[in-house]
Amino acid sequence: MPADPPSASPARLSWFNSAPPGELIAALRPVCAAPDWAGALVSGRPYPSPAALLAASDAATAALDATGIDQALAAHPPIGRPAPGDATSAREQRGMAGAPPALAAEVRELNEAYRRRFGQVFLICATGLTAGQLRDALRTRLGNSPDTERATVRTELAAIHRLRLTRLLAGPTDPADSAASPDPAASADPTHLPAAATTVSTHILDTAAGRPAPGIAVDLSVPGPGPGTWTAHATAVTDADGRCTGLPPLPAHTTAARLRFAVTGPFFPEISTTFAVTPGEHHHVPLLLSPFGYSVYRGS
Figure (cartoon, rainbow, N blue to C red):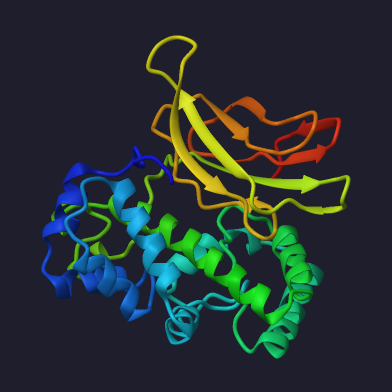
């Protein structure tokens, strides 16, 4: 489970633990539209840390029944077509902004093909993904069985909930604290992110098998506190497409990060890569893996 998101405000967690149930449920609705999910988080208070809250979110997502999954999905627009005024989805799907017309049209066609096959909207944790990556994910998941796709959707929902909760905990404690959110309704919007948020995602491809590598544990660390030391920041597991896209933002002023991949194999039981980060930018660092070699690079 990810460590406490360093961007979380202690006062914001205190607000989460003490807010009236109705106020908190209203704030959680943009995170997940399933009432059972929000009810579970409200009834589980107080949370000693952001990490405990994120773990409770994972458990609540895993416990959603078919109706709850459908309720959650109903609030998500198709990729590339966020509803007017839906700042949350627009921010998460910004990889589609400026996509070439032909690529945008292909995504729309794949969205419709997905809906015809599975009877629901295509859901993916789109933060940090390009239009091409979103198209490729659509193509891949169209080949899933209904049971596999349902499990994939639940995994993607959990990642989205984590990311949105992290943003909620980074938001203002009170509407008066933010000139950009002068009214109570705006203060409940969990899409707020600090302007200089620095983020990391990864994608593991098994080049020997010619497919993504799901189920691989990935640790993200940041420097400190002493010279040459590293502090755990987050832990995740690659989804059915081999991706980790819901990692929490890095601490402010971080200039380096380390990804450690718990791969299995006779030659590389573990792979670690350290890279420089630029504050305020997203860093997509894929891993191309083969039995006796690997490469990492900065993607887009």
